[in-house]
Length: 465
Image 1 (spheres, rainbow, N blue to C red):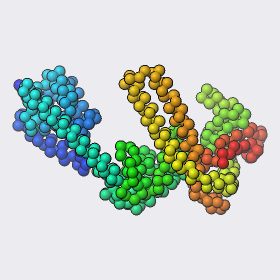
Image 2: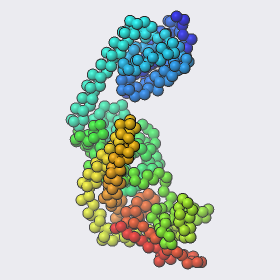
Image 3: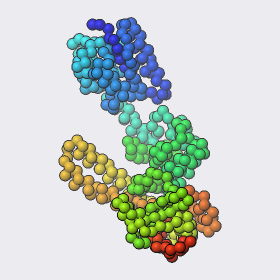
Image 4: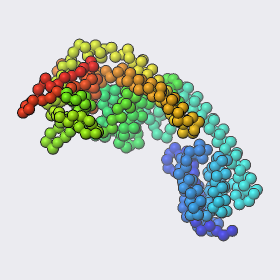
């Protein structure tokens, strides 16, 4: 057999907690030495660092090597040991089939007696593969049992990166970061967007534990994590109290989760630019007014055409309307009715927690139905019949959650002069959230030709609180 003209070296390690790649580096060094001793030319080194060969999850380096072998780009393989290549008998057979189709016979291992070029060698390789799979399965069971035991005891899960808000032991609070979690949780349930808070954190120079600027998904994960409330979760479910002290209360944690669920309804992604977007209705046709910016002015207009289907015959200038509505809202916030609504909020916390759990369960049911349809275990008629009631329950639960949690936006505003001074300091997201809590809709009537100022009689407000 002639030496390969372009061999592949493959290296893999299951866990690299330090992140330095030392395990694969040692494998590569030994594989290069073997290639030099054999006189083989190495075409490329394929590496999967921190990838398990037993989990069945795709390994990019391994998949790329198989594709290159199948295409004839590589005609030989060097691996440190068979268990670096695979720990699953089925995957071993797929590897052997790839070699057979590509007529690749040059396969060598730094350690181990597997010679894939002979019948006896294949038998040894298959036995070694089965043994490796058995060892991995036993190890996996032991690890899972240990993880469950740790969770039941409230102990932290082993990790390479400390959680935000905690020291390296994952138990002791890091005071400056714990303070940030409390601040962000309170601002989030009060109506501020994740995007706005990430921008604020970036401006203040506050970074994540990776030392990079915050993104909305990473901040959401920190705020929604039961760990912040001193709870221990396992496989996505809270199973009890943790050994560490909570950073935020369980009550605030439940409201964070409820707020996340309620915001999934709108799906708003772009930064807010207009205070009254979505609240205004045309007094002529009843359609929604849309924001419209000109070079020298901001307006809300009724738009005609196929995408909007309004009458197209009503316009109102934004600044005076927003100033008028802000004054109405400040007066409303100082009223006894709103104070009573805020005071009665606590009774809804338990209900919000229950609804959040129901919502998560129904969403899992939808995912399960989709998997059943995707694997053809149920047909389209069965899928559509089953998902209808679930989607209806989800929509109803989301509406109920929104009603229960909406008064969170009104806490901490104060009264009188304190309220007015504080309003100016609120960002546009928080102001808009407060308006949506208090107002159902605002109808704008037709204006008078030639009028230079906004007539308050054009504005009719439908209050929720």
